[in-house]
Length: 485
Image (tube, rainbow, N blue to C red; front, side):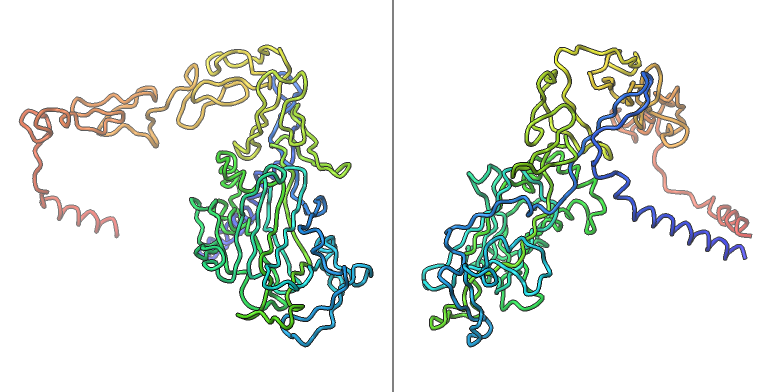
């Protein structure tokens, strides 16, 4: 009965632990609160935290530009053939008729409509001259990507394509990823997949063949730029350890910039042909058509805002922490008592707000502990400047490994985990009083090791090494046998 009860309790405890693990990511929050009121020794005061807006569908805020401008089909009207069946030529594009027009706005409309809506280019009428199209997505705002970029093609997926990004509003461009049926032939790059990347090569620009091969049927229409697979290199396969990812984003600017954009550009270089040779007698089979484009992200607000507004065709952060600007990138007037700094994700879960403080505020008396703090005055945010090993709003607590003794002092030894060895005695947790034959922080080193001749020399005080004696072996066996009875 006791065994069954123990097993039942163990199962219940396992269930509780698993439930706690499932909710762990929410335990450190999503940085959605910028400040809250708390009670301190001085009464009600503000506690400031790093914060950021929730992720959203960013395609509803963008401006799309096509180059060349007249690349959209329908002017003049055209009839198209299906890629997989050159004799099925009943698809018409006519820009003057709403039901038959395929403008670029249809890349971002509501999914699930029947029939499917999509943008479509002109056909490859000028073959062998390349059919080149640039689709530029602009936000006029810095965006942080939070999920995969996904393009859904209504026609065959391109045989050659490049996804590019800009961080300076389209003035300069860098490649994000290359796509081709043959990476070596198209871009002189070895084919790779995102699974080939590691933490050390995450920023590498790769060419993939995963999204360009063969005909495209019902379930094979998408082209991806894998954001979450890259996140998983730090946060784990199910993104359960986002704290690790946030720590990396906080401390590695290149990594943070990699997922930050102001513009995206899709360069379509060669349409799907479905064969090794282009059918020059039926070029109306070859074109580009995109039915959906997904870009998930959030406004970049430097961890100084938890909301972003779209007003007069422009996104801007609603800044907190006495900051201002489209990205909360500077201190407000009269709040420049110290240099502006972005917020920090660390320490988890609330991060560090790094608020802007008033001009000429001077040091504010905060009743900081005189033994644990550098000064009895705080730095303008309500926090004291603590000495090494000390923590807390008033510097009255010790970090692990330290003990309070008119301030936090390093704990050298105790009688539980950090014991003095070889007969040493712990004195007030700050030093070990060692026997004459031993030395070291925890009396772990024979003193003779530092003497001439080492521990085997005469007069070293250390007994010479001898083979183990077997005299005590029968006694040991006897004692073990008694213990088992």
